[in-house]
Length: 577
Image 1: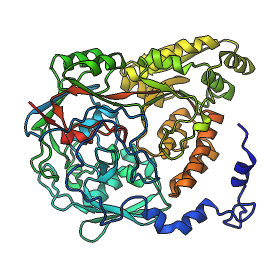
Image 2: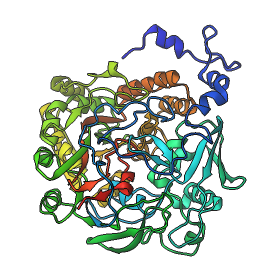
Image 3: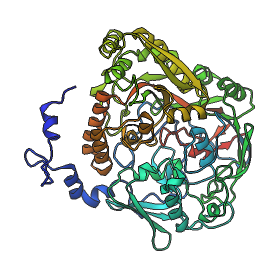
Image 4: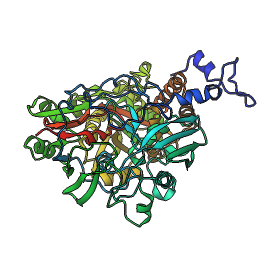
């Protein structure tokens, strides 16, 4: 994996007394950013007063259509490659009324708005709370609570709040609530999921009228995406400070109001009559019914017990796609799985062992075993096609080679390796690749003792580094290569669980976040991908197709391959019956 001379020249060390790269007069990335200044930062998104002030959502289009991150700011490009086309669910004139019965893949552990507890709980919370930015039906960033938004300069981002927005208790949303929200997110006691991503955020300032400004210590190209993430939900300062427990109840500005939770049975939401988007939502309410068993969830949809289900199991995708009266919406872009190591513990502390795991997997076979073909192998980089940093030249870096894997193990002193490997029994999208990996590893002399734990127990075990190897799966938080910071950046949540850090990767990731020039970002993230494959903080497994299924009378919903499968279009959903 040696670099060619051009790459070495481009990456030559800086003269410590100069901003120029050596050799020659090539500009440093930092100088390029300074020269680009407000122009490059301002191109990140529409400027304040621009086209982000939509009053109604974009009508839902075909499923899976999503803006790939063709530029650093997410202002949009063509549909994301790999998205599955499905019939539009927006046809017809929306009808008001009815309760959507949603078969939910797991019972949320709590409702804390600033701590992610999985995609299922995120879907529930997103219907009660609102974020400053969100996604339209094409996966493009638009204003939510923000009527207008944009960069003032490369370290100042401004949003102008919609006027007249009220919380579910009748209190008006103020700039003070937004400032309080991000102060709460930044406070260590909150343990907010996005706190690390906001390390460059120095302060949030309430400006004149309904303006809020985000002041950064260094440029942060991904800030608009962060403001659209579920754990960026805006809360009422007065409500939180009243002493309520946000883990057990919810109160926001979203399209639906929280009514009641019966643990393990249902979560009931009703229409917010005062929602800030005229005429939305169409539904009278949503009842989320926890159904962790995949087969039970599909059966409930087929028999009409529920109208909509998430996390459609792969064993049922083909049948549901062909079944009359049911619509399947999916993408093949975001979901992926990995095999992770505890880096300060044997055997994962040895690079040769990690490489052996990487070579010991026939990922094509794993796609068939785990997902009935509904996926794709990952043999090179992780960044999807169409995104900044996509690196097709790295494909095939870790094609299956059992003999090479065996040789690497022998070099590391493990002629026959037996190791405990943890996964979760709750989600088949994680469990099935783990089972497939276990079978593959045997071909290279690795005996993986597969341990399966319930979701919350599993998460805690990984956090505590209880087992040396684990198998997990997720999706990028947003359609930008900086999502990798969470996994291979020293301050990333997953990197901390891996007990992993690398100064070179930290440097590159910082440069990527501070640079808005697309060509430079492509160069930076290509090197990130290459470095990851060289030192293997984790081993990539396979991509997965993921989606939702619904009765054909459920209209207006669009599956988004954006924002970690944001289900914001539930607010546009209606029942044609």
